[in-house]
Length: 61
Figure (tube, rainbow, N blue to C red):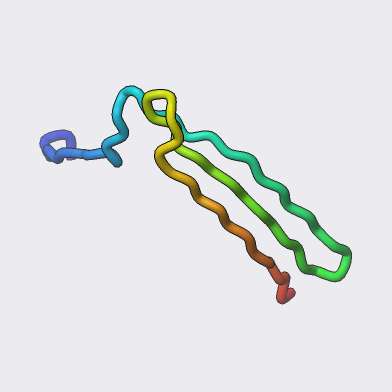
């Protein structure tokens, strides 16, 4: 396959953009857990994007 050629494109972030975030995750002895996350994109010294997510995970085993 070395003769195969293809083009790969990323998500197109600018050179002045960074993503950062924080999260928490807990586990219980009864097989379930919950989580909360916050992520933000900083572009040219200002926040240009925010993402909040929360959820529950259940182990069915």
